[in-house]
Image (cartoon, rainbow, N blue to C red; front, side, top):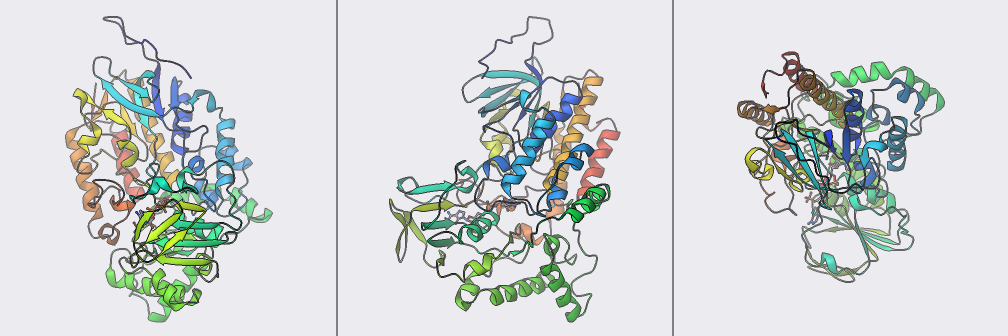
Length: 546
Ligand code: NAP
Protein backbone atom coordinates (compact mmCIF):
# COMPACT_ATOMS: atom_id res chain seq x y z
CA UNK A 1 0.00 0.00 0.00
CA UNK A 2 1.31 3.46 -0.82
CA UNK A 3 2.35 5.56 2.16
CA UNK A 4 1.57 9.19 2.94
CA UNK A 5 2.57 11.59 0.21
CA UNK A 6 3.72 15.16 0.32
CA UNK A 7 1.53 16.96 -2.14
CA UNK A 8 1.77 20.58 -1.04
CA UNK A 9 1.37 22.95 -3.93
CA UNK A 10 4.11 25.48 -4.53
CA UNK A 11 2.77 29.03 -4.07
CA UNK A 12 0.90 30.45 -7.07
CA UNK A 13 0.94 27.15 -8.91
CA UNK A 14 -1.80 24.68 -9.66
CA UNK A 15 -2.05 22.24 -6.77
CA UNK A 16 -0.28 18.95 -7.20
CA UNK A 17 -2.96 16.38 -6.71
CA UNK A 18 -2.47 12.65 -6.42
CA UNK A 19 -5.54 11.92 -8.51
CA UNK A 20 -8.21 13.78 -10.37
CA UNK A 21 -10.87 11.74 -8.65
CA UNK A 22 -11.07 9.47 -5.66
CA UNK A 23 -13.90 6.97 -5.42
CA UNK A 24 -14.72 5.42 -2.05
CA UNK A 25 -15.88 1.83 -2.48
CA UNK A 26 -15.45 -0.85 -5.15
CA UNK A 27 -18.97 -2.24 -5.21
CA UNK A 28 -21.22 -2.08 -8.26
CA UNK A 29 -21.34 1.71 -8.31
CA UNK A 30 -17.64 2.32 -7.58
CA UNK A 31 -16.59 -0.16 -10.25
CA UNK A 32 -18.73 1.42 -12.95
CA UNK A 33 -17.73 4.93 -11.87
CA UNK A 34 -14.07 4.01 -12.22
CA UNK A 35 -14.71 2.67 -15.70
CA UNK A 36 -16.58 5.79 -16.81
CA UNK A 37 -14.05 8.26 -15.41
CA UNK A 38 -11.24 6.36 -17.05
CA UNK A 39 -13.07 6.78 -20.34
CA UNK A 40 -12.73 10.53 -19.78
CA UNK A 41 -8.98 9.95 -19.49
CA UNK A 42 -8.89 10.74 -15.78
CA UNK A 43 -6.45 9.52 -13.14
CA UNK A 44 -8.70 7.81 -10.62
CA UNK A 45 -8.11 5.86 -7.42
CA UNK A 46 -10.68 3.69 -5.72
CA UNK A 47 -10.24 2.92 -2.04
CA UNK A 48 -11.93 -0.26 -0.91
CA UNK A 49 -12.04 -1.63 2.64
CA UNK A 50 -12.41 -5.26 1.56
CA UNK A 51 -9.84 -7.52 -0.04
CA UNK A 52 -11.82 -7.81 -3.25
CA UNK A 53 -14.36 -6.03 -5.43
CA UNK A 54 -18.12 -6.45 -5.18
CA UNK A 55 -19.32 -4.41 -2.18
CA UNK A 56 -22.64 -5.87 -1.03
CA UNK A 57 -21.87 -9.11 -2.90
CA UNK A 58 -18.39 -9.29 -1.38
CA UNK A 59 -19.54 -8.82 2.21
CA UNK A 60 -22.89 -10.62 2.29
CA UNK A 61 -21.77 -14.24 1.97
CA UNK A 62 -24.35 -15.65 4.32
CA UNK A 63 -26.02 -18.95 3.38
CA UNK A 64 -28.74 -18.46 0.80
CA UNK A 65 -27.79 -14.87 -0.14
CA UNK A 66 -29.14 -14.23 -3.61
CA UNK A 67 -30.73 -11.64 -5.87
CA UNK A 68 -34.38 -11.07 -5.64
CA UNK A 69 -34.52 -9.00 -8.81
CA UNK A 70 -34.17 -11.08 -11.97
CA UNK A 71 -30.46 -11.70 -12.63
CA UNK A 72 -30.62 -10.42 -16.21
CA UNK A 73 -32.32 -7.19 -15.15
CA UNK A 74 -29.75 -6.71 -12.38
CA UNK A 75 -26.45 -6.99 -14.32
CA UNK A 76 -24.70 -4.01 -15.90
CA UNK A 77 -26.23 -2.92 -19.19
CA UNK A 78 -23.46 -0.64 -20.44
CA UNK A 79 -21.49 -3.22 -22.45
CA UNK A 80 -23.13 -5.26 -25.19
CA UNK A 81 -20.17 -7.59 -25.22
CA UNK A 82 -20.52 -8.24 -21.50
CA UNK A 83 -24.24 -8.94 -21.89
CA UNK A 84 -23.52 -11.29 -24.74
CA UNK A 85 -20.79 -13.30 -23.05
CA UNK A 86 -22.26 -13.70 -19.54
CA UNK A 87 -24.75 -16.51 -18.90
CA UNK A 88 -26.78 -16.28 -15.71
CA UNK A 89 -27.52 -19.80 -14.52
CA UNK A 90 -30.67 -18.97 -12.53
CA UNK A 91 -33.44 -16.41 -12.70
CA UNK A 92 -32.26 -15.16 -9.31
CA UNK A 93 -28.54 -15.82 -8.98
CA UNK A 94 -26.92 -16.73 -5.69
CA UNK A 95 -24.20 -14.59 -4.12
CA UNK A 96 -21.25 -16.76 -5.31
CA UNK A 97 -22.39 -16.44 -8.93
CA UNK A 98 -22.97 -12.70 -8.58
CA UNK A 99 -19.53 -12.20 -7.10
CA UNK A 100 -18.04 -14.27 -9.95
CA UNK A 101 -19.88 -12.02 -12.39
CA UNK A 102 -18.52 -8.86 -10.77
CA UNK A 103 -14.99 -10.30 -10.77
CA UNK A 104 -15.45 -11.08 -14.44
CA UNK A 105 -16.42 -7.42 -15.01
CA UNK A 106 -13.38 -6.25 -13.03
CA UNK A 107 -11.11 -8.49 -15.16
CA UNK A 108 -12.71 -7.57 -18.44
CA UNK A 109 -12.34 -3.84 -17.86
CA UNK A 110 -9.03 -4.19 -16.02
CA UNK A 111 -10.42 -2.34 -13.03
CA UNK A 112 -8.20 -3.70 -10.26
CA UNK A 113 -5.11 -1.72 -11.22
CA UNK A 114 -6.79 1.46 -9.95
CA UNK A 115 -8.35 -0.06 -6.86
CA UNK A 116 -6.50 -0.09 -3.57
CA UNK A 117 -7.85 -2.87 -1.35
CA UNK A 118 -7.72 -3.17 2.45
CA UNK A 119 -8.04 0.61 2.50
CA UNK A 120 -10.82 1.91 4.70
CA UNK A 121 -11.41 5.64 4.40
CA UNK A 122 -11.52 7.31 7.81
CA UNK A 123 -11.92 10.96 6.83
CA UNK A 124 -12.34 13.27 3.87
CA UNK A 125 -11.74 16.99 4.17
CA UNK A 126 -12.38 19.71 1.60
CA UNK A 127 -9.55 22.20 1.10
CA UNK A 128 -10.79 25.50 -0.29
CA UNK A 129 -7.33 26.81 -1.22
CA UNK A 130 -6.70 23.99 -3.66
CA UNK A 131 -10.35 23.15 -4.36
CA UNK A 132 -9.62 19.56 -3.58
CA UNK A 133 -10.39 16.77 -1.15
CA UNK A 134 -7.89 15.19 1.19
CA UNK A 135 -8.83 11.61 1.89
CA UNK A 136 -7.32 9.94 4.95
CA UNK A 137 -7.25 6.18 5.26
CA UNK A 138 -7.39 4.34 8.55
CA UNK A 139 -3.61 3.79 8.40
CA UNK A 140 -3.23 7.58 8.23
CA UNK A 141 -2.06 7.72 4.62
CA UNK A 142 -3.44 10.73 2.78
CA UNK A 143 -4.33 11.40 -0.83
CA UNK A 144 -5.62 14.45 -2.61
CA UNK A 145 -8.00 14.70 -5.53
CA UNK A 146 -10.19 17.34 -7.11
CA UNK A 147 -13.33 15.20 -7.08
CA UNK A 148 -14.54 12.87 -4.38
CA UNK A 149 -17.18 10.30 -5.22
CA UNK A 150 -18.80 8.20 -2.54
CA UNK A 151 -19.84 4.71 -3.64
CA UNK A 152 -20.41 3.41 -0.14
CA UNK A 153 -23.87 1.90 -0.51
CA UNK A 154 -27.15 2.42 1.32
CA UNK A 155 -26.90 -0.90 3.20
CA UNK A 156 -23.26 -1.40 4.10
CA UNK A 157 -22.88 -0.48 7.77
CA UNK A 158 -24.01 -3.64 9.60
CA UNK A 159 -25.40 -3.30 13.12
CA UNK A 160 -25.29 -5.85 15.90
CA UNK A 161 -28.18 -5.86 18.35
CA UNK A 162 -27.85 -3.74 21.44
CA UNK A 163 -28.25 -6.70 23.76
CA UNK A 164 -26.15 -7.18 26.85
CA UNK A 165 -23.52 -9.89 26.57
CA UNK A 166 -23.08 -9.96 22.78
CA UNK A 167 -19.30 -10.08 23.29
CA UNK A 168 -19.46 -12.89 25.84
CA UNK A 169 -20.74 -15.73 23.64
CA UNK A 170 -18.15 -18.49 23.43
CA UNK A 171 -19.44 -20.29 20.34
CA UNK A 172 -19.21 -18.96 16.78
CA UNK A 173 -21.19 -15.83 15.98
CA UNK A 174 -21.51 -13.83 12.79
CA UNK A 175 -23.33 -10.82 11.46
CA UNK A 176 -24.66 -11.88 8.05
CA UNK A 177 -22.86 -8.98 6.36
CA UNK A 178 -19.53 -9.99 7.91
CA UNK A 179 -19.75 -13.64 7.02
CA UNK A 180 -16.44 -15.54 6.90
CA UNK A 181 -14.90 -16.47 3.56
CA UNK A 182 -14.48 -20.08 4.69
CA UNK A 183 -17.53 -22.36 4.72
CA UNK A 184 -19.39 -22.66 8.02
CA UNK A 185 -20.43 -26.20 8.89
CA UNK A 186 -23.94 -26.36 10.30
CA UNK A 187 -24.28 -30.11 10.38
CA UNK A 188 -25.83 -31.18 13.63
CA UNK A 189 -25.22 -27.74 15.19
CA UNK A 190 -27.53 -25.82 17.49
CA UNK A 191 -28.04 -22.51 15.72
CA UNK A 192 -29.82 -19.25 16.59
CA UNK A 193 -30.86 -16.61 14.07
CA UNK A 194 -31.83 -13.19 15.34
CA UNK A 195 -33.67 -11.12 12.75
CA UNK A 196 -36.31 -11.93 10.13
CA UNK A 197 -35.78 -9.31 7.41
CA UNK A 198 -34.88 -10.25 3.81
CA UNK A 199 -31.49 -11.51 5.04
CA UNK A 200 -32.84 -13.54 7.96
CA UNK A 201 -35.46 -15.13 5.71
CA UNK A 202 -32.86 -16.25 3.14
CA UNK A 203 -30.57 -17.56 5.88
CA UNK A 204 -33.29 -19.42 7.79
CA UNK A 205 -34.80 -21.20 4.79
CA UNK A 206 -31.32 -22.28 3.67
CA UNK A 207 -29.75 -23.54 6.88
CA UNK A 208 -32.95 -25.15 8.22
CA UNK A 209 -32.12 -28.08 5.95
CA UNK A 210 -28.77 -28.88 7.51
CA UNK A 211 -28.72 -27.64 11.09
CA UNK A 212 -29.25 -29.92 14.06
CA UNK A 213 -31.62 -27.43 15.70
CA UNK A 214 -32.60 -23.93 14.61
CA UNK A 215 -34.16 -21.30 16.87
CA UNK A 216 -35.42 -18.19 15.13
CA UNK A 217 -35.71 -15.15 17.39
CA UNK A 218 -38.36 -12.98 15.78
CA UNK A 219 -39.23 -9.48 16.94
CA UNK A 220 -41.37 -8.35 14.01
CA UNK A 221 -42.65 -10.74 11.35
CA UNK A 222 -42.37 -9.51 7.77
CA UNK A 223 -44.70 -10.16 4.87
CA UNK A 224 -42.90 -12.45 2.44
CA UNK A 225 -43.84 -13.82 -0.97
CA UNK A 226 -42.47 -16.70 -3.04
CA UNK A 227 -39.42 -16.05 -5.21
CA UNK A 228 -40.10 -18.91 -7.66
CA UNK A 229 -36.49 -19.20 -8.71
CA UNK A 230 -35.48 -21.60 -11.44
CA UNK A 231 -32.59 -22.59 -13.70
CA UNK A 232 -32.28 -20.83 -17.02
CA UNK A 233 -32.28 -23.32 -19.89
CA UNK A 234 -30.49 -22.82 -23.22
CA UNK A 235 -33.57 -21.63 -25.06
CA UNK A 236 -34.50 -19.10 -22.37
CA UNK A 237 -30.87 -17.95 -22.33
CA UNK A 238 -31.13 -17.17 -26.04
CA UNK A 239 -34.36 -15.27 -25.54
CA UNK A 240 -32.86 -13.28 -22.68
CA UNK A 241 -29.88 -12.28 -24.80
CA UNK A 242 -31.90 -11.25 -27.82
CA UNK A 243 -34.40 -9.48 -25.57
CA UNK A 244 -31.86 -7.34 -23.66
CA UNK A 245 -32.50 -4.04 -25.50
CA UNK A 246 -36.26 -4.36 -25.01
CA UNK A 247 -35.85 -5.45 -21.37
CA UNK A 248 -33.59 -2.55 -20.44
CA UNK A 249 -35.92 -0.17 -22.24
CA UNK A 250 -38.74 -1.53 -20.10
CA UNK A 251 -36.68 -1.10 -16.93
CA UNK A 252 -36.21 2.54 -17.94
CA UNK A 253 -39.96 3.01 -18.14
CA UNK A 254 -41.13 1.27 -14.99
CA UNK A 255 -41.67 3.07 -11.71
CA UNK A 256 -38.67 1.62 -9.87
CA UNK A 257 -36.63 0.14 -12.77
CA UNK A 258 -37.85 -3.39 -12.09
CA UNK A 259 -39.37 -5.57 -14.79
CA UNK A 260 -42.63 -5.08 -12.92
CA UNK A 261 -44.62 -1.86 -12.67
CA UNK A 262 -47.92 -1.05 -10.92
CA UNK A 263 -51.15 -2.23 -12.49
CA UNK A 264 -53.16 0.88 -13.47
CA UNK A 265 -56.29 -0.46 -11.73
CA UNK A 266 -57.29 0.19 -8.15
CA UNK A 267 -57.95 -2.83 -5.91
CA UNK A 268 -61.66 -2.01 -5.73
CA UNK A 269 -62.10 -1.32 -9.42
CA UNK A 270 -62.43 -5.06 -10.00
CA UNK A 271 -64.81 -7.65 -8.57
CA UNK A 272 -63.83 -9.69 -5.50
CA UNK A 273 -63.32 -12.74 -7.74
CA UNK A 274 -61.11 -10.85 -10.19
CA UNK A 275 -59.05 -9.44 -7.34
CA UNK A 276 -58.56 -12.86 -5.80
CA UNK A 277 -57.59 -14.33 -9.18
CA UNK A 278 -55.12 -11.48 -9.76
CA UNK A 279 -53.50 -12.06 -6.36
CA UNK A 280 -53.29 -15.80 -7.04
CA UNK A 281 -51.59 -15.07 -10.35
CA UNK A 282 -49.10 -12.68 -8.75
CA UNK A 283 -48.38 -15.10 -5.89
CA UNK A 284 -47.55 -17.80 -8.46
CA UNK A 285 -45.24 -15.56 -10.52
CA UNK A 286 -41.51 -14.99 -10.18
CA UNK A 287 -40.05 -12.09 -8.28
CA UNK A 288 -41.37 -8.74 -7.18
CA UNK A 289 -44.55 -8.69 -9.31
CA UNK A 290 -46.75 -9.06 -6.25
CA UNK A 291 -45.10 -5.98 -4.74
CA UNK A 292 -44.17 -3.81 -7.71
CA UNK A 293 -46.78 -5.01 -10.22
CA UNK A 294 -49.80 -5.02 -7.92
CA UNK A 295 -52.83 -2.68 -7.98
CA UNK A 296 -51.72 0.94 -8.06
CA UNK A 297 -53.26 1.76 -4.68
CA UNK A 298 -52.09 -1.05 -2.39
CA UNK A 299 -49.20 1.01 -1.04
CA UNK A 300 -51.21 4.18 -0.47
CA UNK A 301 -54.70 3.10 0.51
CA UNK A 302 -55.22 1.23 3.76
CA UNK A 303 -58.33 -0.61 2.58
CA UNK A 304 -56.72 -1.65 -0.69
CA UNK A 305 -53.66 -2.76 1.25
CA UNK A 306 -55.82 -4.83 3.61
CA UNK A 307 -57.06 -6.93 0.67
CA UNK A 308 -53.57 -8.10 -0.27
CA UNK A 309 -52.49 -8.41 3.36
CA UNK A 310 -55.51 -10.67 4.03
CA UNK A 311 -54.67 -12.71 0.95
CA UNK A 312 -51.05 -13.29 1.98
CA UNK A 313 -52.09 -14.01 5.59
CA UNK A 314 -54.34 -16.78 4.26
CA UNK A 315 -51.38 -18.19 2.31
CA UNK A 316 -49.25 -18.21 5.46
CA UNK A 317 -52.01 -20.04 7.34
CA UNK A 318 -52.21 -22.61 4.54
CA UNK A 319 -48.47 -23.17 4.45
CA UNK A 320 -47.67 -23.33 8.16
CA UNK A 321 -49.13 -26.41 9.83
CA UNK A 322 -49.22 -25.19 13.43
CA UNK A 323 -51.93 -22.48 13.59
CA UNK A 324 -50.29 -20.77 16.56
CA UNK A 325 -46.98 -20.43 14.71
CA UNK A 326 -48.78 -19.26 11.58
CA UNK A 327 -50.42 -16.44 13.56
CA UNK A 328 -47.03 -15.41 14.93
CA UNK A 329 -45.62 -15.21 11.41
CA UNK A 330 -48.36 -12.85 10.23
CA UNK A 331 -47.44 -9.18 10.62
CA UNK A 332 -49.90 -7.09 12.67
CA UNK A 333 -48.23 -3.70 12.78
CA UNK A 334 -47.80 -3.02 9.07
CA UNK A 335 -49.47 -3.89 5.81
CA UNK A 336 -48.14 -6.01 2.99
CA UNK A 337 -45.34 -4.32 1.02
CA UNK A 338 -44.97 -1.34 3.32
CA UNK A 339 -41.54 -2.64 4.30
CA UNK A 340 -39.08 -4.04 1.77
CA UNK A 341 -40.62 -7.37 0.75
CA UNK A 342 -38.46 -10.44 1.42
CA UNK A 343 -38.85 -13.05 -1.30
CA UNK A 344 -38.67 -16.62 -0.05
CA UNK A 345 -38.30 -20.23 -1.09
CA UNK A 346 -40.11 -22.56 1.33
CA UNK A 347 -39.41 -20.13 4.19
CA UNK A 348 -42.78 -20.80 5.83
CA UNK A 349 -42.41 -24.56 5.37
CA UNK A 350 -39.18 -24.42 7.43
CA UNK A 351 -41.40 -23.88 10.47
CA UNK A 352 -43.09 -27.24 9.79
CA UNK A 353 -39.79 -29.00 10.45
CA UNK A 354 -39.28 -30.62 13.86
CA UNK A 355 -35.81 -29.12 14.21
CA UNK A 356 -36.99 -25.49 13.73
CA UNK A 357 -38.60 -23.39 16.45
CA UNK A 358 -39.89 -19.84 16.41
CA UNK A 359 -39.23 -17.74 19.49
CA UNK A 360 -41.47 -14.68 19.56
CA UNK A 361 -39.35 -12.20 21.48
CA UNK A 362 -42.19 -9.75 21.85
CA UNK A 363 -43.67 -12.36 24.23
CA UNK A 364 -40.43 -13.58 25.78
CA UNK A 365 -37.84 -10.82 25.27
CA UNK A 366 -34.14 -11.61 25.02
CA UNK A 367 -32.54 -10.55 28.30
CA UNK A 368 -28.95 -11.20 27.39
CA UNK A 369 -26.51 -13.19 25.30
CA UNK A 370 -24.68 -15.57 27.60
CA UNK A 371 -21.37 -17.40 27.10
CA UNK A 372 -23.43 -20.47 26.15
CA UNK A 373 -26.33 -18.99 24.24
CA UNK A 374 -29.36 -16.73 24.68
CA UNK A 375 -31.39 -16.03 27.81
CA UNK A 376 -34.98 -14.88 27.33
CA UNK A 377 -37.47 -13.94 30.04
CA UNK A 378 -38.57 -17.58 30.27
CA UNK A 379 -35.74 -19.84 29.07
CA UNK A 380 -32.00 -20.28 28.64
CA UNK A 381 -30.98 -21.64 25.24
CA UNK A 382 -27.60 -23.16 24.42
CA UNK A 383 -26.14 -22.68 20.94
CA UNK A 384 -23.05 -23.54 18.93
CA UNK A 385 -23.63 -20.69 16.49
CA UNK A 386 -25.49 -17.36 16.74
CA UNK A 387 -26.29 -15.56 13.50
CA UNK A 388 -27.13 -11.87 13.68
CA UNK A 389 -29.33 -11.01 10.71
CA UNK A 390 -30.00 -7.69 12.38
CA UNK A 391 -29.59 -5.36 9.42
CA UNK A 392 -27.82 -2.11 8.79
CA UNK A 393 -27.45 1.46 9.86
CA UNK A 394 -29.04 2.23 6.52
CA UNK A 395 -28.68 5.07 4.03
CA UNK A 396 -26.75 7.54 6.22
CA UNK A 397 -24.86 4.96 8.33
CA UNK A 398 -22.03 4.45 5.86
CA UNK A 399 -21.63 8.25 5.65
CA UNK A 400 -21.57 8.63 9.42
CA UNK A 401 -18.66 6.20 9.65
CA UNK A 402 -16.44 8.58 7.66
CA UNK A 403 -15.53 12.01 8.99
CA UNK A 404 -16.62 14.12 5.99
CA UNK A 405 -15.82 17.80 6.40
CA UNK A 406 -16.78 20.42 3.87
CA UNK A 407 -16.19 24.16 3.57
CA UNK A 408 -15.01 25.71 6.88
CA UNK A 409 -14.69 22.26 8.41
CA UNK A 410 -18.47 21.70 8.61
CA UNK A 411 -19.19 18.05 9.41
CA UNK A 412 -21.61 16.22 7.15
CA UNK A 413 -22.84 14.24 10.14
CA UNK A 414 -23.72 17.50 11.88
CA UNK A 415 -25.41 18.90 8.78
CA UNK A 416 -27.53 15.76 8.52
CA UNK A 417 -28.27 15.62 12.25
CA UNK A 418 -32.03 15.88 11.60
CA UNK A 419 -31.98 13.81 8.42
CA UNK A 420 -30.16 14.02 5.11
CA UNK A 421 -30.38 17.12 2.94
CA UNK A 422 -29.26 16.73 -0.64
CA UNK A 423 -29.50 18.06 -4.13
CA UNK A 424 -30.84 15.26 -6.38
CA UNK A 425 -29.45 12.83 -3.84
CA UNK A 426 -26.05 13.47 -5.39
CA UNK A 427 -24.64 16.65 -3.87
CA UNK A 428 -24.73 18.69 -0.69
CA UNK A 429 -24.18 22.45 -0.33
CA UNK A 430 -20.94 23.20 1.49
CA UNK A 431 -19.38 20.03 0.09
CA UNK A 432 -18.07 21.12 -3.31
CA UNK A 433 -16.72 18.58 -5.78
CA UNK A 434 -18.23 15.73 -3.77
CA UNK A 435 -20.79 13.48 -5.45
CA UNK A 436 -22.71 10.62 -3.92
CA UNK A 437 -23.73 7.45 -5.74
CA UNK A 438 -26.84 5.79 -4.30
CA UNK A 439 -26.82 8.47 -1.61
CA UNK A 440 -29.88 9.48 0.42
CA UNK A 441 -32.76 10.90 -1.65
CA UNK A 442 -31.87 9.09 -4.87
CA UNK A 443 -34.16 6.65 -6.65
CA UNK A 444 -33.04 3.21 -5.40
CA UNK A 445 -35.43 0.59 -6.86
CA UNK A 446 -33.63 -2.01 -8.99
CA UNK A 447 -30.27 -0.78 -7.76
CA UNK A 448 -27.94 -1.45 -10.72
CA UNK A 449 -30.31 0.36 -13.06
CA UNK A 450 -30.25 3.35 -10.71
CA UNK A 451 -26.48 3.05 -10.29
CA UNK A 452 -25.85 3.22 -14.01
CA UNK A 453 -27.96 6.35 -14.34
CA UNK A 454 -26.42 7.94 -11.25
CA UNK A 455 -22.86 7.21 -12.42
CA UNK A 456 -23.53 8.44 -15.96
CA UNK A 457 -24.95 11.69 -14.57
CA UNK A 458 -21.99 12.26 -12.27
CA UNK A 459 -19.62 11.45 -15.16
CA UNK A 460 -21.46 13.98 -17.29
CA UNK A 461 -21.07 16.65 -14.64
CA UNK A 462 -17.37 15.95 -14.10
CA UNK A 463 -16.80 15.84 -17.84
CA UNK A 464 -18.52 19.21 -18.20
CA UNK A 465 -16.43 20.69 -15.39
CA UNK A 466 -13.20 19.51 -17.02
CA UNK A 467 -14.17 20.76 -20.50
CA UNK A 468 -15.17 24.12 -19.06
CA UNK A 469 -12.07 24.39 -16.83
CA UNK A 470 -14.25 24.52 -13.75
CA UNK A 471 -12.51 23.51 -10.56
CA UNK A 472 -15.41 23.89 -8.17
CA UNK A 473 -18.95 22.52 -8.52
CA UNK A 474 -21.32 22.82 -5.63
CA UNK A 475 -25.01 22.44 -4.91
CA UNK A 476 -26.66 25.65 -3.76
CA UNK A 477 -28.42 25.87 -0.40
CA UNK A 478 -31.59 26.76 -2.31
CA UNK A 479 -31.24 23.72 -4.56
CA UNK A 480 -30.75 21.46 -1.56
CA UNK A 481 -33.76 22.86 0.27
CA UNK A 482 -35.93 22.52 -2.83
CA UNK A 483 -34.90 18.90 -3.49
CA UNK A 484 -35.19 17.88 0.17
CA UNK A 485 -38.68 19.43 0.36
CA UNK A 486 -39.62 17.70 -2.90
CA UNK A 487 -38.47 14.30 -1.55
CA UNK A 488 -40.43 14.86 1.65
CA UNK A 489 -43.55 15.86 -0.28
CA UNK A 490 -43.31 12.73 -2.43
CA UNK A 491 -43.33 10.62 0.72
CA UNK A 492 -46.63 12.05 1.99
CA UNK A 493 -49.42 9.47 1.89
CA UNK A 494 -47.19 6.45 1.38
CA UNK A 495 -48.07 3.74 3.86
CA UNK A 496 -44.38 2.75 3.98
CA UNK A 497 -43.56 6.10 5.56
CA UNK A 498 -45.83 5.28 8.50
CA UNK A 499 -43.92 2.12 9.36
CA UNK A 500 -40.65 1.60 11.22
CA UNK A 501 -38.00 0.11 8.94
CA UNK A 502 -34.57 0.89 7.54
CA UNK A 503 -36.42 2.68 4.75
CA UNK A 504 -37.72 5.24 7.25
CA UNK A 505 -34.36 5.57 8.97
CA UNK A 506 -35.21 3.47 12.04
CA UNK A 507 -32.64 1.22 13.68
CA UNK A 508 -33.22 0.24 17.30
CA UNK A 509 -29.53 -0.60 17.64
CA UNK A 510 -28.21 2.85 16.72
CA UNK A 511 -28.32 5.85 19.03
CA UNK A 512 -30.41 8.63 17.51
CA UNK A 513 -32.18 6.47 14.91
CA UNK A 514 -35.51 6.14 16.66
CA UNK A 515 -37.35 8.89 14.79
CA UNK A 516 -38.70 8.29 11.31
CA UNK A 517 -37.27 10.40 8.54
CA UNK A 518 -37.74 10.59 4.80
CA UNK A 519 -34.41 9.29 3.58
CA UNK A 520 -35.47 7.81 0.24
CA UNK A 521 -36.75 9.36 -2.95
CA UNK A 522 -40.10 7.71 -3.50
CA UNK A 523 -41.14 9.26 -6.80
CA UNK A 524 -40.81 7.38 -10.05
CA UNK A 525 -37.41 6.65 -11.56
CA UNK A 526 -38.43 8.22 -14.90
CA UNK A 527 -39.41 11.44 -13.08
CA UNK A 528 -36.09 11.42 -11.23
CA UNK A 529 -34.15 10.97 -14.44
CA UNK A 530 -36.19 13.68 -16.20
CA UNK A 531 -35.23 16.17 -13.49
CA UNK A 532 -31.54 15.21 -13.57
CA UNK A 533 -31.49 15.26 -17.39
CA UNK A 534 -32.99 18.74 -17.37
CA UNK A 535 -30.29 19.99 -15.00
CA UNK A 536 -27.60 18.60 -17.32
CA UNK A 537 -29.29 19.97 -20.44
CA UNK A 538 -29.32 23.41 -18.80
CA UNK A 539 -25.56 23.15 -18.32
CA UNK A 540 -25.87 22.65 -14.59
CA UNK A 541 -27.05 26.22 -14.07
CA UNK A 542 -28.73 25.16 -10.81
CA UNK A 543 -25.27 24.52 -9.33
CA UNK A 544 -22.70 27.04 -8.16
CA UNK A 545 -19.90 26.66 -10.70
CA UNK A 546 -16.48 28.22 -10.53
P1 NAP B 1 -33.59 -5.61 8.09
O1 NAP B 1 -34.61 -5.70 7.04
O2 NAP B 1 -33.35 -4.31 8.73
O3 NAP B 1 -33.96 -6.70 9.18
C1 NAP B 1 -33.30 -6.76 10.40
C2 NAP B 1 -34.02 -7.76 11.27
O4 NAP B 1 -33.33 -7.85 12.52
C3 NAP B 1 -35.45 -7.36 11.59
O5 NAP B 1 -36.23 -8.51 11.65
C4 NAP B 1 -35.30 -6.71 12.97
O6 NAP B 1 -36.47 -6.72 13.73
C5 NAP B 1 -34.26 -7.62 13.58
N1 NAP B 1 -33.54 -6.98 14.68
C6 NAP B 1 -32.73 -5.91 14.63
N2 NAP B 1 -32.26 -5.63 15.85
C7 NAP B 1 -32.80 -6.52 16.69
C8 NAP B 1 -32.69 -6.72 18.08
N3 NAP B 1 -31.95 -5.92 18.84
N4 NAP B 1 -33.39 -7.74 18.62
C9 NAP B 1 -34.14 -8.53 17.85
N5 NAP B 1 -34.29 -8.41 16.53
C10 NAP B 1 -33.62 -7.40 15.95
O7 NAP B 1 -32.16 -6.10 7.55
P2 NAP B 1 -31.84 -7.18 6.43
O8 NAP B 1 -32.70 -8.37 6.57
O9 NAP B 1 -30.37 -7.37 6.44
O10 NAP B 1 -32.27 -6.49 5.09
C11 NAP B 1 -31.93 -5.13 4.81
C12 NAP B 1 -32.17 -4.87 3.35
O11 NAP B 1 -31.10 -5.43 2.58
C13 NAP B 1 -33.40 -5.49 2.75
O12 NAP B 1 -34.58 -4.83 3.09
C14 NAP B 1 -33.07 -5.42 1.29
O13 NAP B 1 -33.27 -4.16 0.76
C15 NAP B 1 -31.59 -5.76 1.31
N6 NAP B 1 -31.43 -7.21 1.06
C16 NAP B 1 -31.55 -7.60 -0.22
C17 NAP B 1 -31.46 -8.92 -0.53
C18 NAP B 1 -31.58 -9.30 -1.98
O14 NAP B 1 -31.68 -8.53 -2.85
N7 NAP B 1 -31.60 -10.48 -2.28
C19 NAP B 1 -31.26 -9.87 0.45
C20 NAP B 1 -31.14 -9.43 1.76
C21 NAP B 1 -31.22 -8.08 2.06
P3 NAP B 1 -37.48 -5.46 13.68
O15 NAP B 1 -38.17 -5.59 12.37
O16 NAP B 1 -38.35 -5.65 14.84
O17 NAP B 1 -36.65 -4.23 13.76
